[in-house]
Length: 367
Image (tube, rainbow, N blue to C red):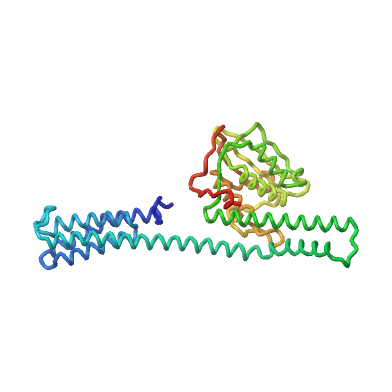
């Protein structure tokens, strides 16, 4: 976890503050016996080193504490008159002022360098993720593109005498290929936005029944194979568009792995503060020690080729769920298979607010 306004982790920040207090004290203990053999300039350099170390570890805040403590200790223990906060020699006063200014400048430079290094590392990580995404989806992008192009080229051919049934089949192939391509691109864009922390999320109280209905519509004819039990009417706190994406991914995954004679199911349970949605499949299941792996991008457990997609569905579903303030965890289906458990906050009528911690974009940027 990182503190607001700093690029350093909380543990490192705490270590910086501890050093900001300890190092000036240790410098005082080490230099006091040498007061007769060292001049103030040497003492100032030692305290300046302590401030730089605090800055390197904890950033600007600890450096300011170290500089302030160093200035007071130098004044009290190493400038005449000793053991007072007054300074009798103007040269010593100038040395103390210069020490504080140099400590502040060096600390600011070190902190700025740490922030820029952190930003560059973050951008590099995003770049690596995007590169990995593009490398992993090469086959998945080419397949629907090739199918759509082949179908359109056939339709445009003046050398072929196509009957109406052939044209309908080619148009259906084109439509399915473009739908597949659109879904893949949407997943890629959303995963990229989640990785960059730029997913626009607006939470409000929504009817879970309506969102589930739209998700089933998005599955097309296969939605008839899903057993749905919504129980009592349940309102949840969510962004309806993002929640629909999560449910479509979970239901499509359950349909993919459930055998024909055992349909997947969606059930809803409400508590005082929470709504729990379970998407149940009766497929082969996954060992418990591999549950977390299914949420990693590009994971298709049990697959040996690229025919089943790039493996972004569950990774994206968990990311979107966490952006909604909920959680997504697997559990074993009692009769065999895997159940995805989606937990969301119960809705509060009339409440609309942005999700904290995420940068909202204008509609044009988010599209």
